[in-house]
Amino acid sequence: MRNVLRKEMRLSSSILSYLFIPFGLMFLLPGYPVLCGAFFVSLGLFQSFQTAREANDIVFSVLLPTAKSDVVKGKYLFVCLIEGCAFLLMALAVGLRMTVLSQSEAYRNNALMNANFFALGMACVIFGLFNWIFVGGFFKTAYKFGRPFVAFIIACFLVIFTAEALHHIPGLERLNAFGTEDIAVQLIMLTAGILIFLLTTALSYRRSCKRFEKIDI
Amino acid sequence: MVIVEIQDLVKKYPSFELKDISFSLESGRITGFIGRNGAGKTTTIKSMLNMIHPDSGMIRYFNRPFVGNEADIKKRIGYSTGTVSWYPRKKIRDIVDIVKRFYDTWDEASYRKYLDLFSIDEMKTPLELSEGMKVKVNLMLALAHKSEVLILDEPTSGLDPFSRNELLGIFTELRNNGVTVFFSTHIITDIEKCADDIIYISKGRIVAAMSKEDFIRQYSGAGESLEDTILRLEGGAIHA
Image (cartoon, rainbow over the protein chains, first blue to last red):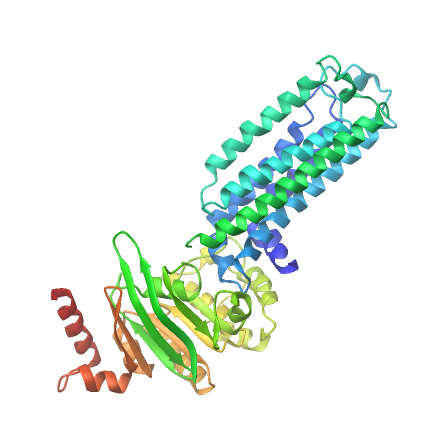
């Protein structure tokens, strides 16, 4: 498992996947749709799939002494690693905004969505959608990724628009809590987001293994 | 001892069909897989490596089916599929550093030996190599992990006559050390020089699979070279 991940990191990936991880810190930007940070991290991952395709990575990987399912596992491990790193940066930003910066004027007067646990949960949903729609879609052919990426962009921005709009609906203001206000609701939303990420990623991985097994390289 | 066994392999495409491909490879022998372009050599080899899925048939290595034992079997075989360039902008050294970690049997001394023999500069990227040098890099990767079986698709294509001769010499040396070598080619003189057995494929069907001596005895006319024989057979197959 370590070998396939190392191959992904050192041979298959694009430097942009790593450089785009700090977009997770967009969670610190006031007056900005913070979930766009998750989209940019996904965009960085997309670059790795493009680089890998240009380098005949799939054929090379299939010829290594591993099962075909390990090739799929390598891709998912790499994607989850990058998403995990970005998530940690987002969590750090959320932590700062919920504690030392909770009374900051710039954040209190923010017309857009607040970066709290709910936002962090929604970022997990976006990453889960990337794994489900894009990575899963890629393994239909192990070659074509244009359509899956367009589908992901549409789904991603629907999630961003929805998340931004929700707290304006009467009764849902608590989703935009500052600091540790409504912490129970926030934690429930974060847990739900993480569960959605885990479920979509696991199901997508299983489906991709089955699809990839049937592909003629 | 039979080390690789292919039984009744069938793969249908809209415009081409592999029909009931059956043959076996004996341990410690060199087998030349010959056929013209488009005869089905690469499709057969890709099927042997599970890169494409046959509609039916069985592929066994070391008395074990390939499907289900893929990772273990791949560690004991080496393969090279032509001159395709992987990771064109990565240094050969970096690619090798990743590949070797997948093999418990990686032999660094052997790797250095072939690096030197093939005059490969490991600091170069595939983009900086000629087609012939890319073939050599693929071969070096296949040879450096003490494979028991080598499966090579057109390994001599793109090589200059000196390198081809060197390579055929390496095949003979490997065979003498008990390695089974299976290589496809459309260059008949390569088979004449070093193969023990011949598998001749035409239009997706195995025409002959036997020792080189038996092949010559069965198919060659008086004073006819192997090349003349195969050209005559292929001409017959085309006009049939």
